[in-house]
Amino acid sequence: MTEHFTGQHNKARLEASPNRFFLACAIIALSIAFLMSVALAGTTAFRKEWQYASDAKI
Picture 1 (cartoon, one colour):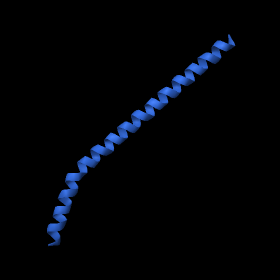
Picture 2 (tube, rainbow, N blue to C red):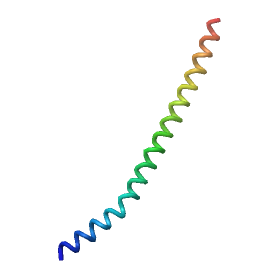
Picture 3 (cartoon, rainbow, N blue to C red):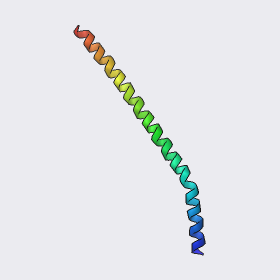
């Protein structure tokens, strides 16, 4: 009886695991994209500020 239950449980767990894996990958990819966009916006703002400062010196 318990063997049948654990067999069903393992089968259900194996079927659910690719969905969780896909979800985890999607979350990681979105997080990386968000961090990259933040970094890009930050460097762009920093470059503009630096350009403004260098123009002010001239």
